[in-house]
Length: 245
Image 1 (tube, rainbow, N blue to C red):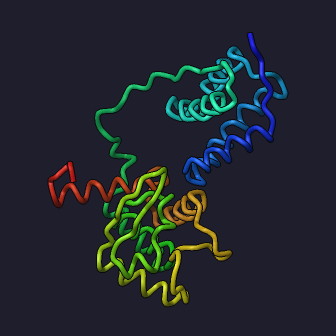
Image 2: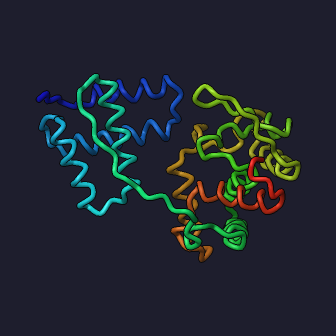
Image 3: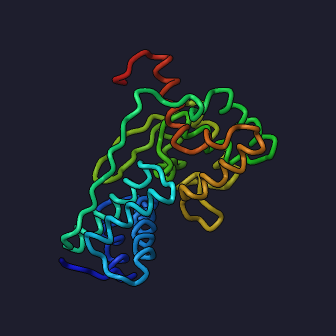
């Protein structure tokens, strides 16, 4: 049975390959974190088929959800393939739910309460960011494509993983975005950069949303960026009754 060693250099090479192939910064960092978790669990020992399976079992023993475990296994398996190692970890079977848990769904009253609270706290960027995601259905990784140019054009061209798609921006939202950009003296480029000029990360957006939900009295389990996409999809379907659109 073969055994292999994991070090920071090979993890770095793997992450760079992901980025070269179009992986978002959030995805690349998530894979790096999962591989480091496995490496840390090994405590300097070799990676083998047996140790990989024991790590999977240890994650379950820690109380990790099956979907979370499978997500980490996907990252580690991808690393094994990249390294050419003869190790594969089987995924856990997850029974799909026919319906979403309503306790986890962000409702329209919840959403408007978040916007109202953000306004009261004078968190204009966060309020507009929430409105942008919910009005367009974009992913958090796509926020960087919301630029002053896109707001003037009424649409954003998003290119990720070798694919390009067009996101239409509602007129009311465009006016708000351009007004905010003018206040921030942003004539071109991203409308929601950090103070240092970099793109907002998923982690930062999530942290700001979590802090807001506590002050708004909205259950924390409902508040995460992807739930805004769910709310957009539900609202759009209620208006159009066209699941294909």
